[in-house]
Amino acid sequence: MIYIIAFLLSFFAYKRAVIADERNIRMKRNVMLVLSVLPLLILASCRSISVGTDTSLYQVLLFKDAVKLESFLKFYNRRGNSFEPLYLLVTYLASRTKKIFWMFFINELIILVFMYLTIWRKRKIFDPYLMMATFYFIYYCAGYNIVRQSIAAAILFYAMAMYEEERKFTALLLLIVAVGFHKSAVAGILIALLYDLSKKRVNRLVGFFLFIGAYTFNYFYLPILKVLGNTFSFLPKRYFSNAYLIRKGGYDFNASLTIYCVMCLLIVGLLLLKGNLRSNSYEQFLLYMMVMSVVGGLLSAKATFAYRALIYMEYYSIFVIAQVPSLFVKEKTSLLFSRGLIYVFLVLYWVYVTALNGGNGVYPYEMAAIL
Image 1 (cartoon, one colour):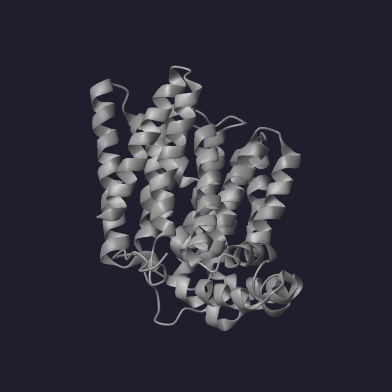
Image 2 (cartoon, rainbow, N blue to C red; image 1 turned 60 degrees about the horizontal axis):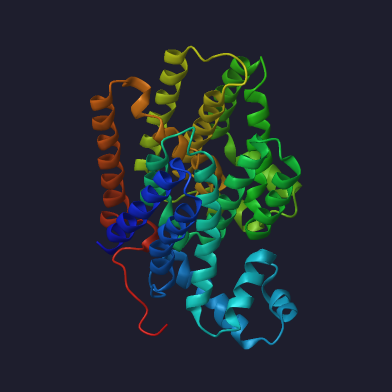
């Protein structure tokens, strides 16, 4: 329940920020945005070390190691083979306080700043409220678990917003920073390539081969990934071991796969209804992202690491879900009703994945006894 309360408080402040922005009241807008971030930041920072699957697996261990060492160089020499340098740096700086609260605080602050920056830049293109609600109910809790990749994904999400605005040098710098938190963020190069291809006149041909190639890769992923692991030495070797590439227990059909399949169909419907199969179609790019997300869902049932390799594409569902109500409905009353249905869907998804099935290991929430 505490998560829902935090989401509502954050959403209320965010809505006031949007309204203030529409009225060109900048000071109120900025204050409301800060207030919107605070409930989410406080909730993540004050949690017990038992909240979040990866918290006890490596976050706490790294923090304790960092506390014992008097220099970052020694800390990096000890842990640099397994963890990225910028994440180690953040952990080490937080460890100087000897309170893990500050490590949680800095990690979550980075995620929230870049997610808010990206969503805010798209507020006049997609429904600003549905974008934020999608972030709350699908991606926020992942920041308690796969923290390094959540940081990298948030930074890369903003980097691509810069890339779309032709600020390519800024995008490159942000990509490097994202890789500094998780090496898999090199996937940003593929995302940028697909974005460029979506603007070409050959985009329908590209889309066809992407579909074929993506689903072919799903069936022949093992030898392909083995070759990639041996070719690119900077990628973590553990992700290319059989323990990561082969899931024990057979096929596991999960909720996220269903969602991304539906998203693909919705984007196709959007393209057909709008007649927007011409070049420079952003919807075409979103379709590419959802195709890759479905492949990630398929692979995650067979290869443990696959979900994390393609999580960067999944973040574009924030834009996809935000335009679903306006896809088929134009009349105001029906539009409000369809938006309401999306909110209900997001809440039910969160309840099913997080509360009932223990997604990300964040439910039930426990506050730290001593901050």
